[in-house]
Length: 231
Image (tube, rainbow, N blue to C red; front, side, top):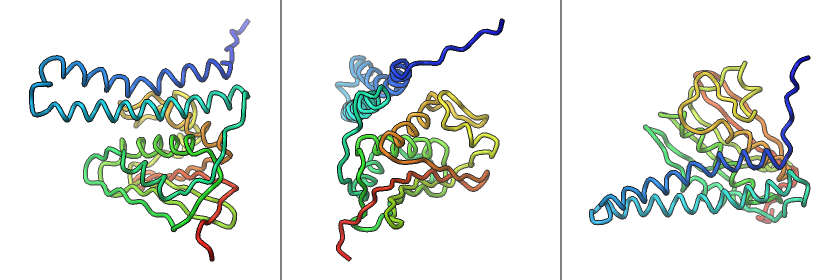
């Protein structure tokens, strides 16, 4: 008889996702501490490693909050709390934490007062995941974080001029642990899977548009868009 593959419960999915997501900042902290203990604490480079620790610790806090919210949604314990979130400050906060490589311009574009009713922590986590993925693959050109209001819909877009995703792989990039042929050594194959789960939990949908050799755009669309600027 063929062997049946047991489907993971929401609780098991959360444990797997959390373990992989938390591994990166924890490794950064441990590595920086080891360097300091080895003698760097007495050198001019000390502040650099302390800054690495501070940034990784802050990322751990954000990850923990987002994953806990996501876990409670996936296990149906409660719906995520919503608030009116102004989009330009959110995008700017995420952009400020990005680590660019190569000759790449990072641009934030958003009309004044554009906002959406959603869960800020989940959306911020999702935007950061996609931006981190874009910076891993984009070594020249441009990455843009943008938002706009289309009627009553709020849309957030993350666009890059990276290598693009082959059409045959596009339907699978949001699957857990999926890594395409051109995948780098960065990440675990969970980032985009968690991104989709977070956006859906926050009341949105995810769209992907990509052309090989041109770049990729990932959009989040939410039904409760609003403007804080009086027309």
